[in-house]
Length: 106
Image (cartoon, rainbow, N blue to C red; front, side):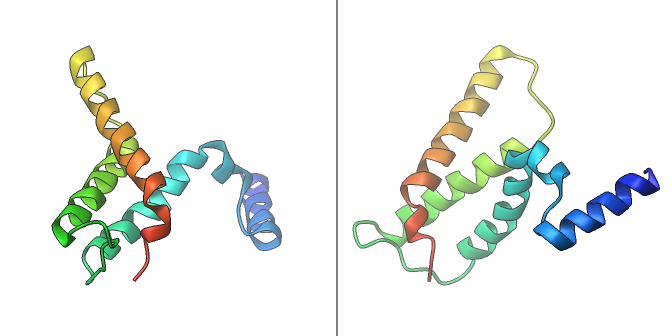
């Protein structure tokens, strides 16, 4: 790594709280931030939304976790059918994350 580039990143981190590099692949950086916290949330005693059982809530959180794991997984399946299944799981998990975002608390 170039010393000038490294110094620039340090200055950005101090002044802005993040680096330009983090915005280049923002989805990847957000997934890296969210995934371990979502896993920890899953493993705590959590209260499901009033309209859902604990089991249903955990299943939905598991689907969210799978979506973030698949996004971070660099191994793209070779078969188109497998790619479509992968994308379907990602879409489902992200839709659940968006739908239940305000329920992610305890």
